[in-house]
Image (cartoon, rainbow, N blue to C red; front, top):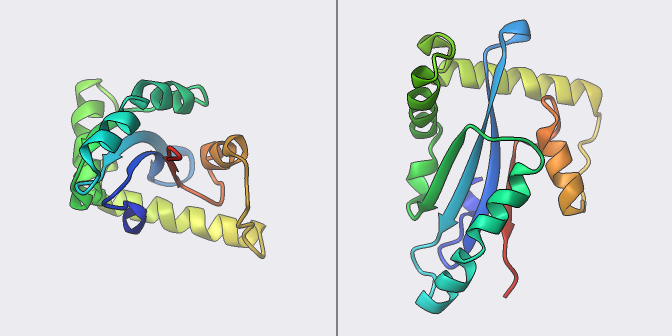
Length: 154
C-alpha cells in the first residue's frame, strides 16, 4: 500500500490486519487519512474537508479499531509502527494477550490468508470493482485484498 501514498494527494484508506491463526485469529481494522507532503495548500484544504464524510462512508461497512489521521510520512504506515498503535488501543481495552498482536503473529496470519486465497482462487480477480464491491472484498476476512485507498477526484 505504501507505494501508492502519492506525495501530491490526500487519500483515505482502510487496512485489514489479522493476527494469529485458526480460531485464535483476531482481525483489526485501521482507517488511514494520508495527506501528502507536497499537496498544494488549497487542494489540501478541499480534500481534507471530506475527511468526516470518508470516515462515515468507510465505517458504514463495519467499525474500525484504529484511526490514523493526517499522516504525512509513509514510514508511519510501516507494519511494526501500526501494530504498536493497535497494541496501545487493544491492551487499554482489556483485549487479548499483548504477544498475540506482534509482527510475527501478523506475518503468520498474512501467510495463512495468502495460502487460503491462492487455494480458493486459481487466478485473483483484479477488478475493476465498484467502491462497494471493493470494500466488501476487503471486509471478507479471507478475501483477496487487505487494503484499500480512496482519492477525491479533482
